[in-house]
Image 1 (cartoon, helix red, strand yellow):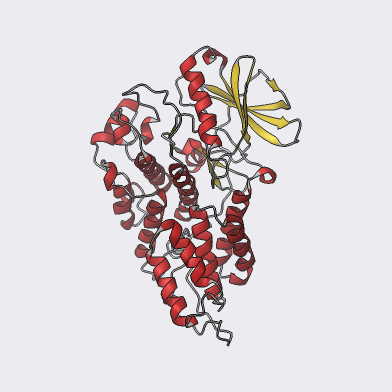
Image 2 (cartoon, helix red, strand yellow):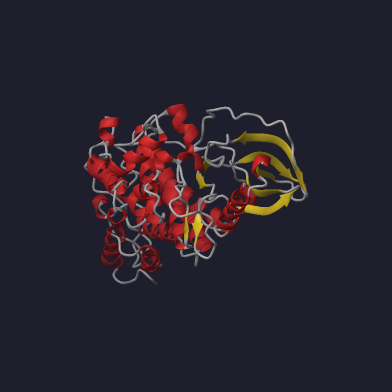
Length: 448
């Protein structure tokens, strides 16, 4: 449907990706509308976490184009093709980032409808950005699909989509569960040779156990994935973040630990004033929301990054747009395939929320390593940058900062941070536990 070019913005001097509608489709009004719809849907999410940013849209010689950030890390599809099943720690980090983007889209009335590894792109730090809202449906935008039309990719279609029914946020959550299954096992749950047969299996097939596909996985994951892949939308998780939290909890349960996620919590010494914590037992506090599973289960390095997999076909034609000169083509998509994905991002042009989200991720990594003193300034900056966004990333960052302050024996603002986290994502047992610990240890001084 389109062609993707790596280009340089002649005005700002930044590397971008340019998606141009293929010439053979330029005269087809329905496809032109879909292409434009992609830009409008994605532009509404430009400040959302882990989402590809749209810089510009326009038309050149009768062909619509979209200019977006360039992501050099390939896609999760590339990683699965090259490496197969991913280490759980790495897979859950990617799923957490994807969940944040999709939940933000749903909060803005947008349903992606084509969530799959090929649309989950990696930046140069190995973090996920969700791309290609080309078949998204958005509240307030005119529909361009006929009743009963099936849009999406067969391997990731929710049962209701496969039946030609309207997609909903629950459909995206189903697709994310398929992605989770594939990342953890290296295979799709209903993989078939025929797309038609695979779509039918989503509707009628029995849900397989991930632990049978990959014996290295604990059985506790099977029930979580089964709920994520439930045939009935109402039986699935309420949010994408809830699915990821449940996967974390399942891995933690399998490890027999007392923490919710990440590295074991050390014994922490107090510092001797009323706003400092006394001795704190390791089992008393659950580690940061949005973390990764217990280290005893995840003994791989889990490091981010990417390995180049398939080599894209080079396109010989060039396109020059006002202020933008193509310097290298990236990929093309055959007519029978779904719309192409872009590879995108430049740190210098990332929105402030993205920068703050990155600080939260860096801070969390230091928390996992037990370096709470190092994590503290990063998390404080993250919370400040995310303040008022109402995003799940703000909720995670607020919780992480509250946890880190308690770990360092500091009570200042802890309860307020927990209130902010809970206001976004509702009551969670991790927040309740940490609140009780703060109230018990700080003696009511948590907001001094």
